Image 1 (cartoon, rainbow, N blue to C red):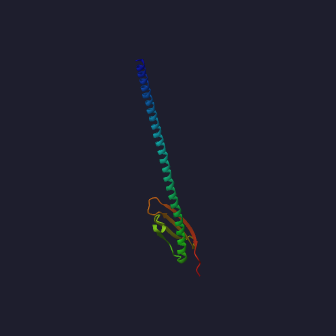
Image 2 (tube, rainbow, N blue to C red):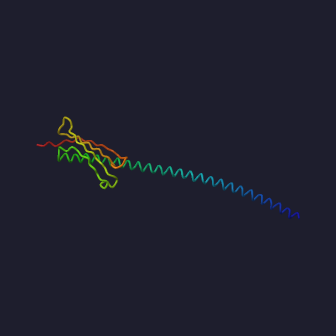
Length: 155
């Protein structure tokens, strides 16, 4: 009998130890789960910040491309006016509309060219070209180029 009661006591102690160890294991599992969730949240926040930074860099790059394109368009407007003035000294300017297809489908452009006679110098013209790119959007780049052109003396 004694061995049976001893066996029951040992069995009960083993059962109590097993229940206690399962509680410890479940607490550990819960702590690990919470730690993993915190890690996932932190990784998500870091990835979100990196994505936002990447989008901002892309926008900045596109804006810089638009500014460069507008600068070249203003330069082209001044050259266009110089060519027109060499053929016609009465050329007063124009609004030059450039289709998006001619600019690699990046958007249309507009270049306002003004030609004025330099005061006191009838043989000189002041050419101002104002380029807007892209011309069909609320946000655009605008660049101005000005040049003084000496007209050829005609005999």
